[in-house]
Length: 445
Image (cartoon, rainbow, N blue to C red):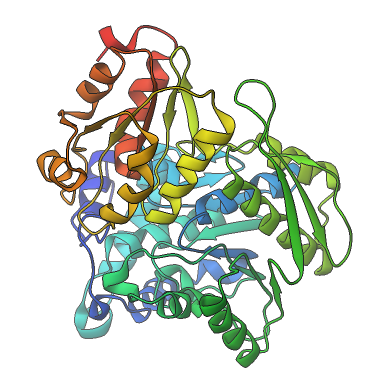
């Protein structure tokens, strides 16, 4: 049986997609995932996996670790979600996305595995979109014979489909309020779900410093006899913010083993320095397991990491900064980074968000930092909040649709423009902004 690329995507999207609508607890199960991977000869059992979760920073940390592993000579698979612009971005080997032909073939093989046996899973329920996504990634990495694989959790941790793996290292980047309808409204409950990726006898690195969630993580690690290396206890960092177009930000990490030299970071913001410190702690833990990760691979990996739409400068004169902050904590980091790293002056915000996000909490940090705000609505996800509702919540501002028109309107002035609120907004606009580059965007959209 053959399949075209379009047929493969149509099949994939025919499965329930919790990136388009929020799941409930009853929807999240690992039995379906184990069943599916078993039908594919358990590709995850042939891979050395670093498993990464966190309320924010998990994508950046995953990208940093993968870049370092690649620079150290490992054939490295990187699994992330959701994608910015193209599905293929989710499945990378050595920084290169899966091809359309490869993706089509792997989806066909997963489809065959699903349909070639008795009714699937618990109660015959079909795998979800993300479960298929996870299977596609793991099967692709096995076929490409990766010698290291970095898996980013999709949602939570304990019941995420990636949690069928037995990693060489688990990583928890941070804990803050997000997906509260699913993970709980207390930091302790969110931490409990994230810490669900901790495996018996397997080490874990944590960037969590708040007392309440930190206590949860410490207790779970102890109960599972997992060695825990934590920010604030086992490693610390210093930060120099640098300045856009003049000097890269730098981090200096001190661990129980050594004081590292100042390392340049290719991503802006102090939150990325904290992420880099977590990554350095991961490097030391992998070294203890026998991995060969030279200092120069660490330095170049942190400096050259490519992780778009994280305080990414996509235009100059005026600056256009693209970000995907999606909760109050990440919105605070956006403001702090603009203040420390960019020239002073009036700023315009372009904002859109999904209906399950804490928009009011984000506005608390964003409102004082911008002299003008334009609300829009991305077209790629039905959970987007109507701009008129955002205007009401903010207490003013402009409503402009679609997002490309919002950018055109924003660029009529000479103010710095920051686009944030959702990965879906960033994903819709980035191809237009990057493709146009330094030309006149106001005439190109």
